[in-house]
Length: 467
Image (cartoon, rainbow, N blue to C red; front, side, top):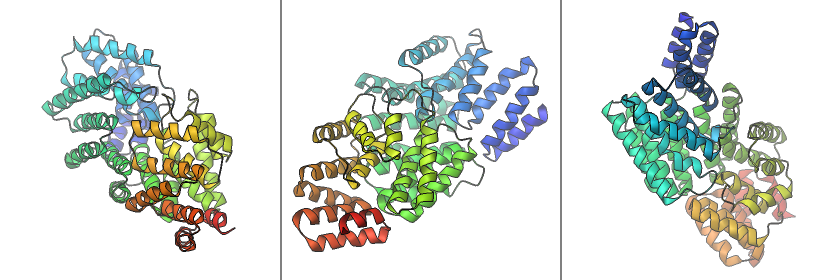
């Protein structure tokens, strides 16, 4: 058994966390009962993906009584962090009441625990609570403030024990508070500060850091920065290293490249993401579907049927793992190109539990591209909800395009075109120039748009405007 543990240590030293988890699972099969709690905790700490880590931490906690408050709090804090921070990778999402029970147990243990590491983990897990609850309902200002306070406490403790991994996680929680306030520039600045931790930061945290910078940049409409930083981050990863974490960054890179119009690179990156997903064990990587859906729409536009089918199947296999989500059937209709699926997504986009703004944005874009019916009232409500929740520049532009087409409003299309040009969003520029030119009978504008669509290889839209 010990040689398996040594093999796991060697794998972790080279950031091969999926391999490390396999060794630890094999060691667990051979271990004596007294050795299991340590091995399960190590399985959790290897973090091959959220599901396996939760399994390890929960098994360790089940073998740890509250009579050992340090270990119990350390494990509970790790479970809480896995649930609240990695919400897009947890298919079996607990209810608010279930999570509150876990939090209450942790708060009670916090009163008795002495280990700084355990306390920091719990505070950091609480630091992401606002982020977690926002996938069910809007977090209140008080909840966001409380999460931020916990994150600051966790950061202070992590600095006192010089634990750079926990410092990075605490800073990530602070970024999430800024996101909820719609301050994407501050969120990006905080994410960038994590890079100052340098080479001492392990590869999982570095991947997450670059993902947060790319995410914030996309939401600011700074697609060039999102593409640049995601490229820089992925250059750090070698084959076999942290596939689930690298997939997060690949997804944001694919999405940003798709919006920019770097479609050759976007399709290649989407395929890289698909291979990472397979390598990670075909996990419930809901967070990756923003990239896979973006790649899928490019493949459709180019009439690349093999690529489209690979990506559609991947999206579908991920979505069906989220059995509790009421939105999954709608998105499964969208990827089967059923207009009623898009209509359902738009009709529910303003509901309190609606999330995944990138999937909503790609769905609205697809519906506009295909002239699918979109009720104006639902579009307006969805646009208002998106603006109040995320204040994302590209999402606002996509909704405004759909609204302008619905109303036949050239003035609003001109506003969208100006936004698209400032973001360097070439696919949107090409579409809107054609749409605006058709509305105003400006053949020169149409030809400009068609030139962009030809460069992109967008066969679907070329046929739409040339017929």
